[in-house]
Image (cartoon, rainbow, N blue to C red; front, side, top):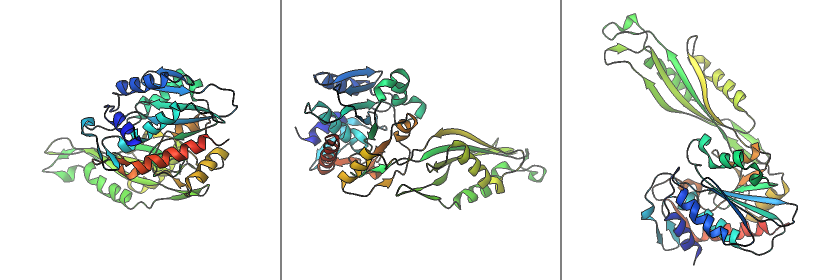
Length: 351
């Protein structure tokens, strides 16, 4: 069976977020047949570990879930696999399964983590479920998260902050708007302020993080004949690893101060932390060397931050172009799978 055919078998199993049970069962059954692995299932998460005598342990993780899509449309087209999750990230999962089942000796112990619910709210993450119920399964000297990265290391990740800005007005009849103050109209200046934002660029450990600020939702209005007295703008701010939740929120409040006033509210409603690059870690530096390409900063948020919170330096490295993730024509190629498999196997074989 080729790697594309092995990946097709996984893509053909539907696993939209919260529906990973069947795929978890498939992986658990295959991994349990390997005498050199200790396999445990925690909910819809599957962890397989070697249990030899090596002092060092490396961890490779990948999520089972996909965004919504029709798994029955998966197909092989020449040298590529098309289908929901092919790139993000079942192609990489197939390589992980292949290498996990390889009983050949390695100079380090290896933990393989296949986890659920990465594509939805972080509080539902299967990785956090494992961390809560079996934290011992996530102990490692370093980790690789097999997100699609085009076969190069994407270091660290951005934090993501969601803020709701509520602007106050005064209600009135639309026939006499001069007796009120239209809160929806006030949003115009605020949105223009956000649209003028110039991304902050932050160099760290040889890679550059580029922050972003976007308006993502607008709420307001009372009735067709009422001047609205309240309106809300939801913002998403992507934050470099040199800022934590409090400093990012403080900066955003200051940035919006020109268009907000007493009686308005700027509320931090959601946060996922950033992660530093950790490229000074010897094993992660060795992975960069093996790829033969310079590292770059991760544009979005990934679970490298979850590992960083637990004191495990981690990096993103996987098959497929990240720009294809979540697209209608998502695909991964045979060359991308082969390159990922070769580099990951070489990394695990390096002391």
